[in-house]
Length: 150
Image 1 (cartoon, rainbow, N blue to C red):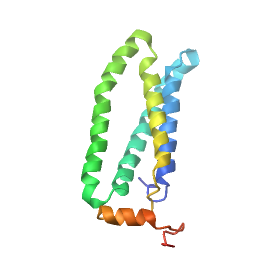
Image 2 (cartoon, one colour):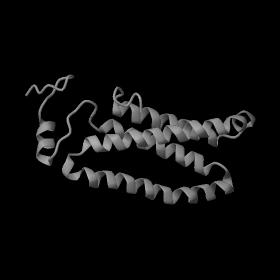
Image 3 (cartoon, rainbow, N blue to C red):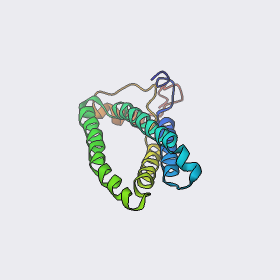
């Protein structure tokens, strides 16, 4: 929360989802060294995923104009709830082979974070109220300070 005003949204989401994915996949690996570190790996993975989700919600609010912002935020929240439905099924499958839940969680989190690369950066950008404003803003060419050039 202290750095959210200074950090790049795209990079933050990508970094935290990648970190969470890597540490979750490391939890799926078996061995004496990994067994001792598993709780630490799980905690880093969990907190990285939670932080990425928090940044993603801020990112979602900034991406959409006011007229559709509530619907967009609700859809993001619904996707999280939908994912929560499948979590217990993966944990139950993990009891059989011991690798399913961490491997699937790691791959899904890591791959979903890659989609943030396709989104525009929103830090420091003014929020739009209507879809027309958003469309006109996307057509305008801006420099790094946010000044409209064309």
